[in-house]
Image 1 (cartoon, rainbow, N blue to C red):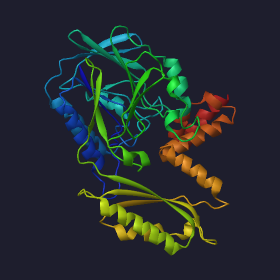
Image 2 (image 1 turned 180 degrees about the vertical axis):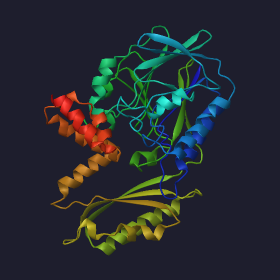
Image 3 (image 1 turned 60 degrees about the vertical axis):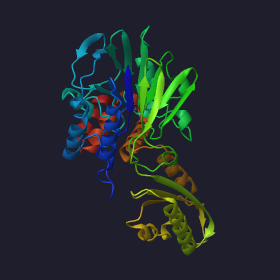
Image 4 (image 1 turned 30 degrees about the horizontal axis):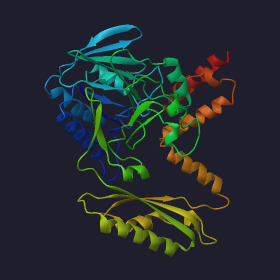
Length: 410
């Protein structure tokens, strides 16, 4: 049996000059996957960029997820099993199986994107359950735990406690941060380590982290799918191209295929030791110019420039105009400037913001984390569904918030 994996397509993500990039990259990934003539396509979450997509994003979803449906009918039979109930899944073309990611995650009282996609026949949705794919005498079981708030992830994984099915191939699919891949330790950012992952699975596939990696540790074979599109310009994404992954279950061979025609990212750091504003501008200008000198592709490159160290005495980071740094490159590159200058009065704040940025969380995720940290200090603690409360606040439902809190208090 041949299975293709990819993840984090982030449909609906747009930036100036990159309005169709998420769609284009996802389409190319699907086309590359289909060219492998797989029996099954497995996605590891964050299919869309916003938990409540726009109409335009829904159109993209329909266009892209109809592609595998138009292919030659897969020979496998697919069964979904959850809470002891098992039923056959009927599909067209090549079946798609997916978990939801952090971007689709909503409180339990709300439908999410994958609920709708499953009902529409685009995919089979896994969360705390598994599917069985059968082809002749071969069977593969795909177990899926969708993305949950990081603080609760280890508890949810232990509660679910997935067990491999005997005498068949078993694949576990997750969408969480993993401690070994983060530069600092914070349970709000990652509560799961490699040692916490359950044993006995032939392959553990994890989305969420946008760079690809494959390794074996603690007797576990782990694949990080990476994303199909660059959304935050991380350093590791500049070193590792976007890929899909193809597993041949007969030979156990896992092959990485680069997505063609992807935009190139360059990540540059510049350390300062007390320079003037003009000296900073000159160094940034030379750095970007050097990158453009070596860039040979036709598409505009992404260039992330991180400014570190200290400015001249009397200068503050706010004195440095980002617009002045970006203006020379309009039409030549897509440049992002990260001002991480350290001042004695700002050092701890800058460090905290840098950690939040490295955690790869959206603004909404950061808001939810702050809400949970504050709830921990109250008598409500874990008695409240923090995601439900957060979504009520986000939608301006103050009366429902008061009603919820009053019921819990009583």
